Image (cartoon, rainbow, N blue to C red; front, side, top):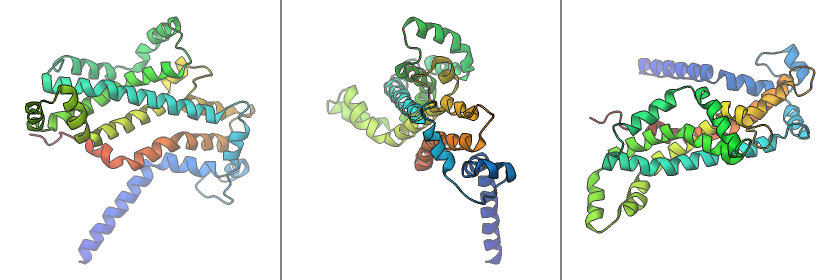
Length: 278
């Protein structure tokens, strides 16, 4: 019994240490955001003498120069567009690949391999194309790019999930006169709801964190929070205000952090789907 308790305690100790090390940047940023500038200079470590929310209040007082709510709204709208379009396009494509083997041998590998290429390769042609069609610095333009960025991951997750579904259910529905559209919407989609939700959350998080295209394709109207947060590093004009910068970064990471915590079980299941299928 003593040996069992010691083993369990050791496991929890290792788990706590690993969790602390993996979340060290977030913890450090949170602590910094709760300190005054004077205290950050005196005690840059983890100790907080007088916790304060002044840095968070200062962010909103600077809205005349850096509108944090505008950046957050941009990221929310563009992430929803990117995640929603990726799901709408990937779900029927994944079904066609798995059940009808349309493009299974060439389209899937092509899409996945394109995603493996550094995104900076596409920056110049996309910028020039957007310039011609007036999509620069627009939420719709960024949403379309985010859709393309997320499409390979969503396609793989959904295809893997659909491949695990028993075909007998669909065959029975076809015998009863159900069309392909009805099978997708009334049978496959409800059964795959966990993977669909996990794909949507992952797409949303990746869209929220996208920095490269946000920096290249936006200037003012559609600036996302990932880019807008960098404006606060020298907001005072006299050097970096670490407390304000840390508070902005915490606000920027709050949405994906909460989504990840709420959906971590579904995300884990979707990422390991098909791993033990023989």
